[in-house]
Length: 388
Image (cartoon, rainbow, N blue to C red; front, side, top):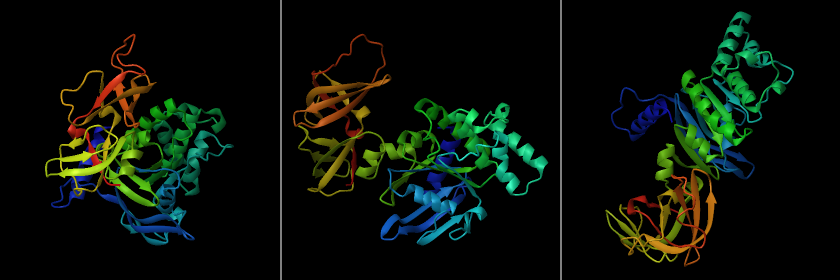
């Protein structure tokens, strides 16, 4: 993440805490107020309220059917809310048609005109708006220069690579200089390596132009790489809005913890509830889970302890303290991923736990291999207790 994005995150965090307003508080560009969208008896978006700030690259993240694309289409004006309001730059846009909104949309399919050249594709919207030819030519040249496609202006879409077509579609949407650009799965058609490179290009373009981007994606890694903030949606509702770091380290529900990255989730009973720590008795583990911070729960109630795979230690040697936060098992499988390896450890209870270890050295043989008897352990501060 760039320094610009980090600064914006800090400003947004201060703004949302309330109290005195600092001079660098970002200006809200989109306000979604209690928006619901129904299709017959089906509720696609359920009472969503959300503020997006000027200059943000904001991601709507969720699985298929969660409502993220419907919400994006309401921002674009292709769908009308059943109830609630949508404000863009302070103006009520709830019932304003798409062509009168200060937004543009880039579709997953890119929707480039196959019979037009790259330059003609980028110029199309400008000409439709009646911009003088000289200005159109200048604007097109500026936009193609931003994405380093000036030399390909005379080519047609079928003569471009997938990444090049993606960039043409992007600058065509940006050529009219909208206040907000909406992107529906913008990198979904690219292969993994190109997608990773294009993510950073997209961030750099967004920051250089200062346009607010709202991105719909189902890819957690994509959301983490690009976004200032992320909203996770499920069944038409927003479950959490936060920075990628906060979302990963401090999920507020079991669904968010399991959806946003890999996690080991243990269900147990809260047997000790103090202000500075809690203890969870989990039948799947041979020892209790000790958490070194208080949680919002009640003693005797069900609790879910989330531990990320990279925060679990793996060893053949017994930990110094075996009274808590550890268990034993057998290495059932190893998944080699180049930079890291994931170990699947089957505990004595039958539960399988994921452990991720960095491959820091080019060792001929790993210290731990299949069928080894091992200990897993974790620090009390690395456990997050979430609601159901």
